[in-house]
Image (cartoon, rainbow, N blue to C red; front, top):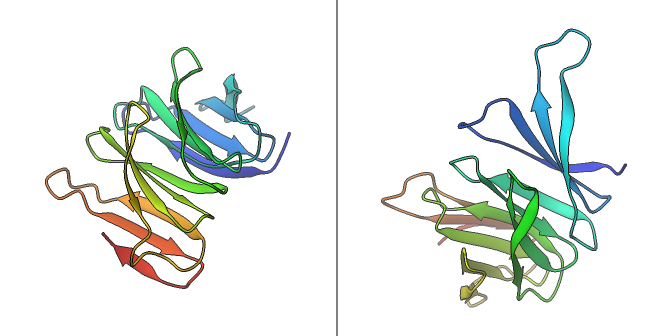
Length: 163
């Protein structure tokens, strides 16, 4: 019902698309090659209490992460559509989220100007504020190389930083 804010795909399941929206939900789509329609909604994921700002699918295609203006992240099991973990720690809207290449670490960026590194159990292992962004952190990503898990971030301070 709301504007779509983010899209995610999976190499493991190329017929799946995940969308996040301003209506607080995520939708798992099944893509088709039909001439009448390109796909259909398979499952709605409910749990956030505010806008979903970003989403990503794990490299194995089994899980998704979402970031929200409700100041939380959620880890979703896509087969059941349920939240398996809720990540609490940011003090303002979470704008971006990413999995590491091995899916064992999660990074998030927020309007609170911090970058947080989490494990998949929902524990915040590290918060970057020192020498961090002076404005909102708009995007965070892990490098795809599992041997060198670099984090890259960008912010409203017009900077791109490598951690």
